[in-house]
Length: 323
Image (cartoon, rainbow, N blue to C red; front, side, top):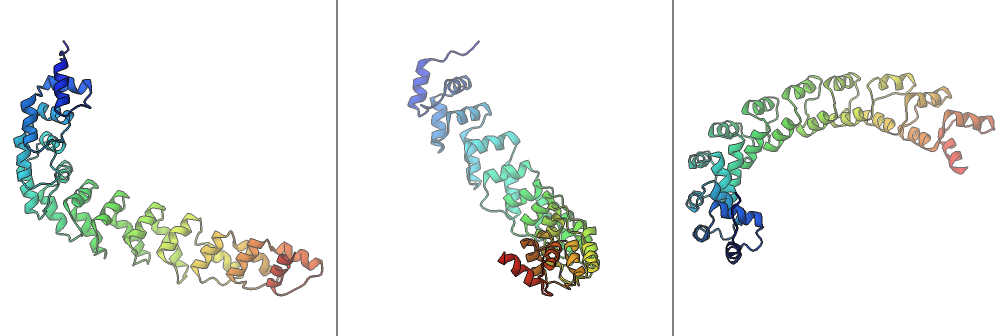
């Protein structure tokens, strides 16, 4: 049988400051026995801003103003009814607060404590993580580390590879990307010994495999930077292009120039056509201009057939511009 909601109760709630409460909220409050004495007890405890829904939830969960006062007396910030109800529901005790304080955390926020407890952060975990020396590390940050699945052994593996100045953000990022230390070790084995975590994350997100990097290293190009490999992989540039350019008659010794040519759609076959016409070792910038302006080997041959014969490829670019 539905509880009868008297108009007088609605008027009382309005006078008590809950004029915006819905009929459903008022009915729930009435069912839980929310009366003047209960509301006054919360007001006296300093929770005049509590909503009717929050008071009703507190009553239903048997959360008292005295319990809230205990949390405040423990030195926590952000103590409100909603957080106290959450703490009450999950069985958060003052002993947990003391354990976190003993672990070195001060100015504890109640919401952070609840999140830490929910994520399984305990004193042993805090000690293990902080012993690795990663910085900075607050309770909120260590909760993020725990939530992402990072443990002290994982951190120490990274440190053993030379990543000494690790932050909690680094660990969260690499773990979220399912990036294991073995991935970095494989790049080191391929000859890339100074790869930042940021570059590793970019490499992982770009599906860059250590075998791809190793093949580039074998080409002997001196200026191969790890971060360039990500763009090379994304654009479909393969190490075999080095031999292809050499076979086309070009001395290849610059990785960045190769990536530029690839990005502009200039391939070895394009360069080979000019070599066959007697134009040797055309500079990269000129090859790009030839491609951009439509000066192809066929165009040059057509101009030769019309009587324009030059050994300077730039003259054909000027001719194209003139026309």
